[in-house]
Length: 308
Image (cartoon, rainbow, N blue to C red; front, side):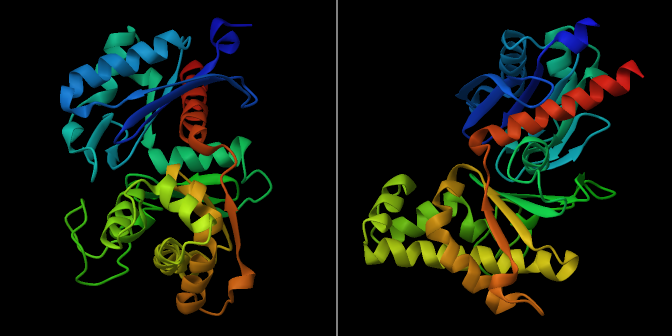
């Protein structure tokens, strides 16, 4: 058995506030996980060095998968633009990480964060029994990954699944992408926190969830409205692709039981030819691990390509 076959699969999930990383066995079983603050203000070179350090500690030998939010040039290993991570726009992140690891750039695979989360859930999580679904990650932004026939669909330019930038409210709030009224401005954790504060609730969504669970009417109504906006955005995917399964993840995805009534209402309002009961809305079973597990799978596939 080659050194690469024996080595753990290592993946990195870069977010606006944290870098999540881990090592997995070839069957997707979690071996080890880590999380450190993103601290993007320290600059892209420092970021690359810290990502490489994590990968090295986790036993990266042959291939590394990296999930990053935004528009990517996968071949060049560059983040073209990221609505929530502008500090790395245009930076040759793959080259920098590979240099820190002492590996060829071809050994580091770059993919959209929601796509790797979708791959993680399809490979080892909630989507294992469903060949067709939309993965939605609710965090700093709203990410999406389309899985059809068990494969993540990225599109010719890699933009497939960017559900967070579907317009839900024309002329609405300004999004980090530069457009107005995107789903991300209404249903991300960032947006929900702002909406909570405007309603006189705590900014901490865990506190809001606790209040709603205990029966607080204001918190319950807020989460219903956020869920309804999310459902309205998801309806676009049902019209275009006739998707009927949604896997909801990301940190704010933990609020799914409280968001669900609103999601169903939004789907009923906007979906064509279907009723709320036609859809399955599942919680991501891998939780915050979905991104790095999917990234590890991407790294495994890249390593196989390099060996072939």
